[in-house]
Image (tube, rainbow, N blue to C red; front, side, top):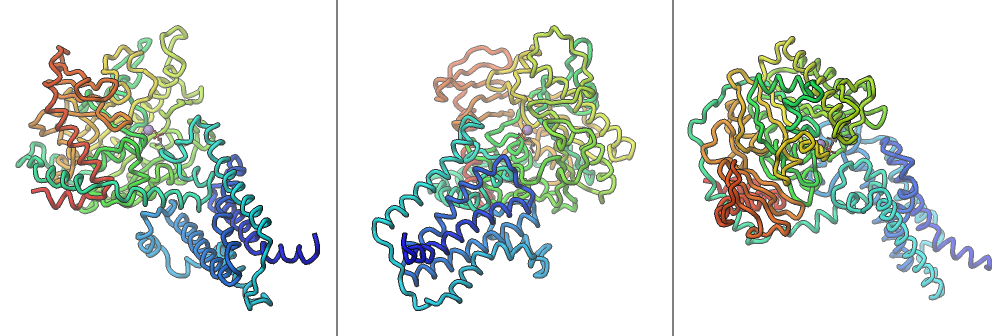
Length: 632
Ligand code: GP9
Ligand code: MN
């Protein structure tokens, strides 16, 4: 190659190529500085950011020189601004800026951010691309915009090479995901740890993916859906005029214990003569215990339970509301309590980006969230040394609760009873004989349940000692099942569709005791709490106050296709057939199980389908205010 040619190439490709590699470096540094870098992901991070770098800066080669500068100015400025915004936003809120949240950016920064705290030296690196374009433009001798022209066939080769690298970059990401997870769905649909996602694809790819998803969802709600919602709102049942137990726990604190994977089947069960959950068993006796209570989760697992309990809305069948609809308008329980003078806290031993909690919690009304960084792991439980055990979670949460100004709401979310139920040997205190009908996983599940139960018992004793037990209404529920088939192993007879959904729900408040076996679900938590605290819940909730249900309680479960799996009411039980078509399902009496004509279940089916449809329209269309304004 002649010297002129090399110079021509350098001049043509030099700037875009430098910008592309700078872009890759910026993505790496972004992750390293924010401590979300993982060397396990470095190969895919490299290829996929290289691909995006080419997509961003490559087109400069298509323009004449003058326009190529203009193009590079614009792109490098946008990239710099976005990097900086994401960097600052994460530093401030421990979450990534989503497209739907851009309108909140001022709000986020105005809380903490004076102009001074925004100007951190790191931003210099994120603006390096723009500064570089500026510098090259300024010092370039050829500012008269003479064009560099390459022969056509060389342009074609260059173009094809770029396309090949871009294709390879994204393909590499997808195929490594597939190797690890057996599918790529975790990357694009139910990604739960956004920190890991950004670790894999870089912040810019994340932002683009999130923006595309947001834009493509925009027209999900048709005029017919809106008309349906309006009509549904106008026919929504009126509230009970003077509900029983209203204000029984007035001005008390609210302490919620949401227990990971806790199934109802372990309550009041013994194995080898030992109670699996002695402390919860005692609490179930001391309080009001719902033993026919169900979780309704879609792909969002724990987050879906938080969503349905705090909003009394149904989770979505194919999306995770915590991630995809984080910045909707909600009228959630923590916000209701804030409006009534409470301080609201969440406590959970995970990173704040998990399930996008740090983005949605402010929308729900949580004023402060304590996460993994706020706890010390003294005795790890789980896969790694940094996994917070439930004993650490509770023992370190207790003094915090004691220090809070009252009244407060605190939601403590446990994690030790999470699959794969890894519990250090010294904490395995349940003596289960070697010869049982349990699988290894079921055995481990029971050990871990026993451990979590102990941690809850210690927490409750602590609350009794410091007086908070008497000043608070305490609610305990399991977030969802364990997916271990433990209920059938322990001889429980639950509808197959509901095997992984039956969880215990216990309310501890003086004057409330007994067992309630009516079917109920996590959507009912919100109105029940509000009633006890003497606060009127918003009219928009979908659940029922379990202390005042005058209509039979029904509950349904979504299958992933978005249909209804099963409905339980005090008189009727509906189960969907394999194809999910109503008439191919079965209808029986409750509790005797006598077969009825399918038409006997038509009413409850239509009613539940309407509830589900209305709730989904509200979430997908961000229509809570519209819904509310149409309720009489
Ligand atoms: C993650 C924890 C577990 O923070 O709550 O979530 P899951 O995997 O059950 O959804
Ligand atoms: Mn969970």
